[in-house]
Amino acid sequence: MTAHPPVAAQRGRHRPRRAVTSSAAVAALVAGAALTGCAQQRDSDVYTVMNSSTDESYHRWDAEAMARCGKRLGLRIEQQSVPAAQVMTKALRMASSKSLPDIVQFDASEMPTFAEAGGLVDLRTLGLETDEIPRGIVEFGSYRGTYYGAARSVNTLALFYDKDILDRAGLEVPATWDELRDTAKQLTEGKRYGLALSAGGAEDGVFQFTPFMWSNGGDETRLDGPQVVEALDYWKALLQDGSLSKSTVNWTQADVNDQFMAGNAAMMINGPWQVETLNTDESLHWGIARIPVPRAGDASVGPLGGAVLTVPKSGDEDRERTAGHIVACLAGEREQLTYALNSWMVPAHEKAAAVWRDRVPELDALADQVAEARSRTGRLGAGWSSVSLALQSAFQSALTGQSSEAALKRAQQRAASGNRGTRP
Image (cartoon, rainbow, N blue to C red; front, side):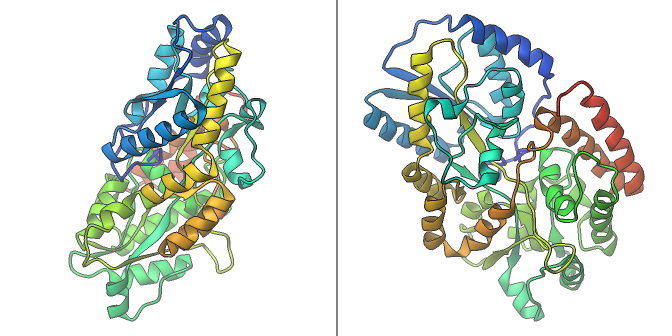
């Protein structure tokens, strides 16, 4: 989803592709707002959080958390929810009119664009600590070493499998690429495919490709490198085996989950946002495991997904400081655990994550996967968007006939052209 998330994807719903906004355009809009302050007169006891919690359950959970934090801090916190694809454009419009909310929850892949423009406050200067947050999650909310975004929970991808189908076939859960290919081939029967994944021309597909690229030693700074080519060739091999549906080039992560639940796929690559839907079918006995790796002993490195809470610069240091207290409460250990148990995501805080493991042991493999996961924007920052768009085009070309090498060579050229002038 998110990219999305993909928020990587909320409850598995497909999110429209986000518009790519140039860093220069963002900088011009954001700098003006930060330098001149807020044009609006604001109630000193009312603070606003803009997020993408348009889903009824997520909106309710956030409202309840904000009410609890507001009570503790002696103020009122109002929630303003807009579709995930519109958060950045909405924030830019509000920046141009100097009416930004006190807190904005950005998808972590978009946060660097706003940070690069100088529009966000360093959360450490507002008193937020990161001592008990894993390094990868701190980097997930950082840009060029500065901590701008606090995650309440994070997600990543895992291998979901139908326990009954594997048991009837007498097969073990695959752990390596060779095992996954062989198992998927054996489980492909009739109208059932061995594996389902998203390779669509949107961030969903890129999100799903990163575990294969990264676990194989590939790097987003060189899309035409041999490790990336090998990873895409692996996807092509699964397709050529008949283990993947040809429709995989059009599927979102929500579509993948639909196929799995309908019995049309024995395994799938997907994330924890699907758990609530999976659990609605009591006859479906599913399990999860780490995403298989090229060779036994390799680390399974997936993408961190989710959103981060940020404090936009407003020129009003007192409000920024109070906004920091709100972020600290919403992203605190207690609220993280509550949110994660509701949403099936993994808490960002180490102590909360330990309690979460005890409460939902069936998702323990997901927590292991999160421990190795990393941010999509960690190396390229705002330049990730150009890489994502280039990869999306490469999937469509390679999985419909072009060689992986040629498709990724073109992708590297597109990404380099899109990132020309962007700081690393």
